[in-house]
Length: 351
Image (spheres, rainbow, N blue to C red):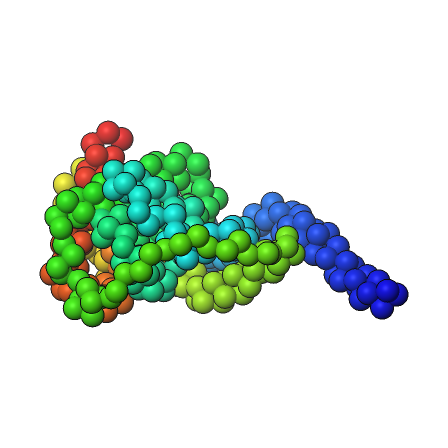
């Protein structure tokens, strides 16, 4: 009896360290975030350049945005990692399997918005969804919404450019995912899956056992997500902020307005064409978006650029080639591009 008490006491102390430590670290990071402007200005002043010169502006942008984005990314990934302990890929499959298709499209898009699945999860999720008998269009709604309007990207967008643009992006990204999935579903494209995927023997998805996870277990999962995701994307954060700093410091506003302003009708399709080959993620592209908007780029053009980078990246298409034929990939790109172009043109016309 005394041995059991002795064993549980260290475990209880360890739990309390998590309960107190996580909020404590959160408060410290929040206070640090609030001091980024004076800290960045102090560091910029250490460089032998004029603060208001092109180089000075670029350096100030880079020094301020790097810790800002990394702090936001760390906090958002931790929270979504904890949420992911309730929304595993298997549970998501169970929720979607057997749903009425009319409700399946918005439900799949909503799950894509709420669940933090990165692009590297696309292929196994796609295979799992198809093998579970989930309609192809519903699957596409999830796969479009996940990377395009996932919680990490939305959180960063909110932190960097404000809730108004983040909300607009959420609404239109969700709409594109829902409508594109419905259109693709109506086209009956299952015959364009790779042969080995069509041959999968779909088994029923039964009730999943409830995992007995404690709050500390979920906090540990959030910390593991920070280690894994931030560890993978930090280099792309630096690349994206570096590009954003160059735009902020060196690209004249008149040039940016001529290329990406709302007056040029070709700016929206050009932004999509430029965005598709780029290899980055939400954490990497949002600093570029911040710099483009700061230079006067049209909102519709900028949103179209961001959507194309995240939802239609060339590397993502190469990965999906494992399960989709080239014809199906082309149809997928055409449908999603149409939604992105419509979003860009609409916002440039209204604003």
